[in-house]
Image (cartoon, rainbow, N blue to C red):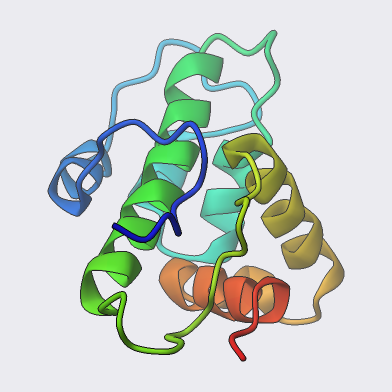
Length: 135
């Protein structure tokens, strides 16, 4: 089996990520809010990925961030057969850690004009394509 997945990724499915995307009741939202968990656009995903450890919802926010990104990555990997060259992006060997990938995505989103308003999955794919081009 080709090793093209982010290191440290635990089994996650897009279905679980979608279930987790349902609005959550948060006691103290801090810098993130309930609407961020819908992950409509890149801004929502960046808010979750930027949650601070002192925020009451840090664990749920960062896990949602990682879960969404892992789910999209796994969907991409399932859709692109290992024998095919390319896809939207090609993760190098060895792959970056999840934390490294999340930081790189957030930095790209904050530095790229218009990225924050893109649909989350489109922004994530644009970033991955620019970060890990195929060929």
